[in-house]
Image (tube, rainbow, N blue to C red; front, top):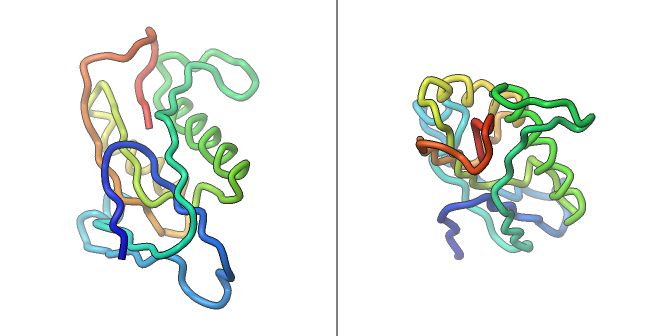
Length: 143
């Protein structure tokens, strides 16, 4: 058995038939589930895609989203999904994320946006870290 942990976005692009069996076991507990993350996700087989941190100050149409937390999170998850699709997976294959925010008051909102990004309730493991600032003015989050 291989256990995955660490900082960054980890996606298991699992081969074989998803219909024939489960591809991941979500170790659910009440508090983590209430915050839209899993206490742990166990996987076997497949390929691993290690993704770089994602940020956004412009949306897909090029509009400025500096200082807009919700818009940045949605744009980041959309970009992640596109990268994952190029590798043969999708956002639902993500098993672990690390979220950096510069305002701890956005923690509750991040949980709501994770629920939106993972509507099936199969949440990745998640670590949230508050930082003092980002490399670009107006940036509020990195996943």
